[in-house]
View 1 (cartoon, one colour):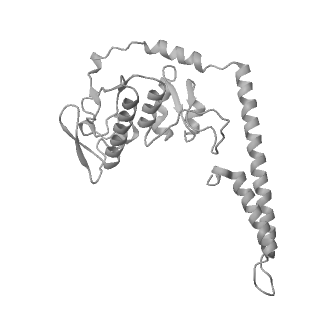
View 2 (cartoon, rainbow, N blue to C red):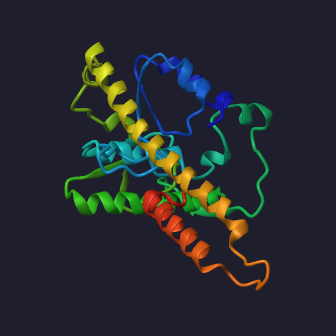
View 3 (cartoon, rainbow, N blue to C red):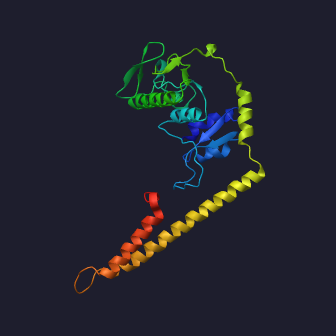
Length: 263
């Protein structure tokens, strides 16, 4: 995530929630003063004892934000600024760095699609693919919840299956956003005791992994030390005793790493 392209969101720190994963820009995370919550795996390795978390699937932040909302139980989701095309010919929001450089950035191999207004708009293949992924997400969640609804507020946004267009003036929110944010703030606020418990538990989890990786390193070093003795200098044949030792160490390493071998 680009810091320059995203720093405008600081204006909304009191009325928005920063949902992020491990690839968040550290400058954004460090300067964000509002509510924030982490999505995705806690660690790069697998640990059955660590509580599951809501994931943060891509390919874009739009897909991730939609996934968060659906998984958190929202039954009605309104899309604002989710165009998936060059609405009215513009490639970027008017105040963005890209728009300041050029109102109409040049793209090659453009394709067209239908908008909510029934008009035709240009887009690029990556945006079209993202739209297709989004439609698949909508279908998935609607198959799980019969009353799940998604609305687009953009007349010039790409028309999507299972997504109805609605004019912003016709929307009636059941819950006031300000009160909703206050409720979430209360739910996310941790006491000193809860913070201490979280740090203590994390330290315990990290200590367990350190022991595992230290043991793997020890097995690997023993195997490397034995490797020069693997071949018999006279016969140029493998020394079966050394070979068996290395094979046992290999099995110990595989058992210690388990499903985390790739990591």
